[in-house]
Amino acid sequence: MQESIAFRRELPWRNMSVVVDPAAFSRWPAQAIESAVSAARARDGGAWLTRALALRARHAPDVLWTHPRSRVAERVLDACVRVADQSRRESGYRTKAPR
Image (cartoon, rainbow, N blue to C red; front, side):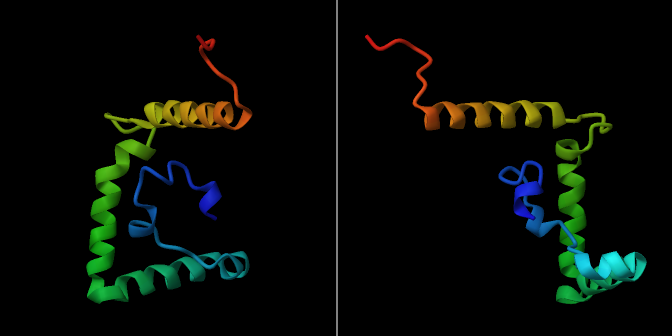
């Protein structure tokens, strides 16, 4: 699952995501979501869910294209640069000629 999360290095996904069991979701989607949210509500007397929702609100510009202060385009471009740099390092490609 970690490989498919956008901006996984930049955002605290573990602290703001409610994880739904994929097998349960395949069989009974509504019940699986309800169960996951109920478990999140019960965690730390509801404090975890309160913190998770606050983190989601704080990071909304990082993941929502429609947010008035969206940073999604910046994040995508930064990720492209990071992948290109990693590819160059792994291939031994140099951007400048040696002196």
